[in-house]
Length: 155
Image (cartoon, rainbow, N blue to C red; front, side, top):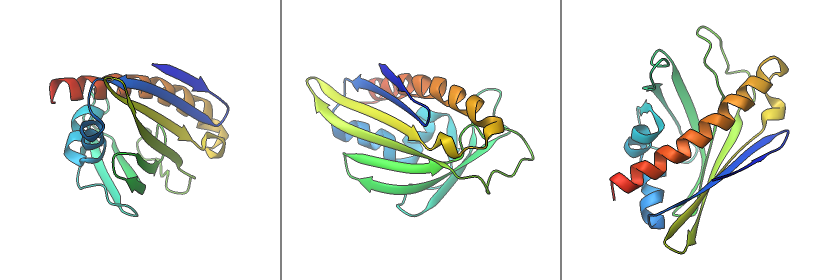
């Protein structure tokens, strides 16, 4: 797994020992996404639509997240926007500019390369930008390990 850090974006990639169709399903089926991501999403991913759900990660179960799907190009590209590391109870993040999360899939020998990019941190309010960047950088490392484990255990 590689990481590229820049001021405005996080980029990570991993090679999964699973076919592209399998990785696509894990990313875009909201029930499968919920399993490996640690959230209980209420509805499916639909371009232009929003879905939300309660986090299931220990210590964060009192929080929910909302994602707005931007694009879905089957077995190739999936993107959504959200508010990064929006964990303070009672804070309204809706007026902040969200970051863009993009997943790109590519065939490699023996499986699929999955690249995730989260960009737009320069528009996160300065008071929480560095922490949101740091937490999401670590979070994406963990999430890529989680999806790898998910597709390996659920072929």
